[in-house]
Image (cartoon, rainbow, N blue to C red):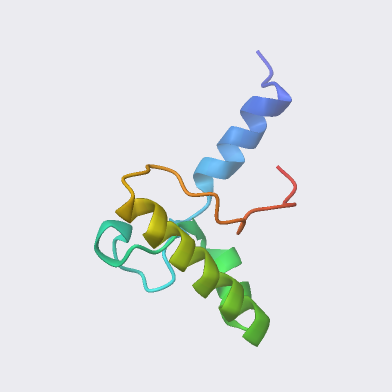
Length: 80
């Protein structure tokens, strides 16, 4: 049976290597998880570093408040 569009998207998403910017566990550092390609792209520019730092700050604040998810906007306007 052929996969639906959603199933294909999920397969693609799970095959990506997800990590934090430092490579350490998010539970220890409070950093956001993102695909390796996204992190590399963000770390290569000054504006990207600023965006990544802002996302990490928002995530750390949300974690301190006991929230599981943080709306940091790092993945905003990305084609899914």
